[in-house]
Structures are given as structure tokens and as C-alpha cells.
Amino acid sequence: MLKLSELKEGEKAVIIKVGGMGAFRQRLLEMGFIKGTEVFIEKYAPLKDPIELIIKGYHVSLRVEEASYIEVDI
Image (cartoon, rainbow, N blue to C red; front, side, top):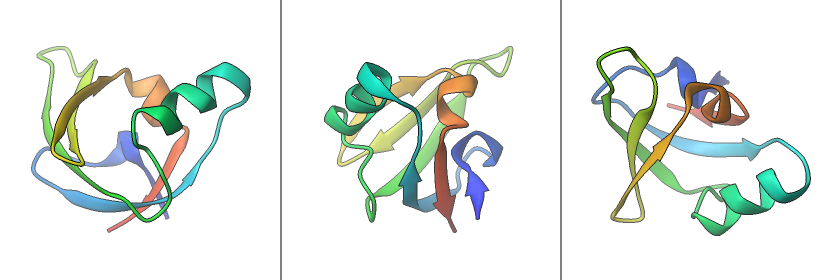
């Protein structure tokens, strides 16, 4: 298993586990980061933070630190 933050631009993965606690975890779940959902790494910002993702047809930006709480499988 990998962390979402470890993927490179253009890679796809399936969410295995969403970590974190409380309101932070709830916010990730509300944005669609749910087990079994496919996520695509659109691009990284010039300084590698944040990451732009496509999940369920929506563009979402996450900080690298936030993405490290999400475990994925390629």
C-alpha cells in the first residue's frame, strides 16, 4: 500500500483507507475520499504542494500532508 502523497502525476489509484481524526477525516469523506473510489493525480503545484486530484469527476486540491493520511493501491 502507498500513501496518496507518494504517487506521481498521471497515476491512478484506488483508495484503501482514509486516516486522520475528527473534523479533518470527516471533511475528507465529504469530499468523496471513500474506500474503493478511484483517484487520478492531475498535477502537482510548482513547489510540489498542493496536489490537484480528480475524484468522482471533480477537481480537488489537497496539501501533501493531508494526502499522506490516505492509503491507496495502484
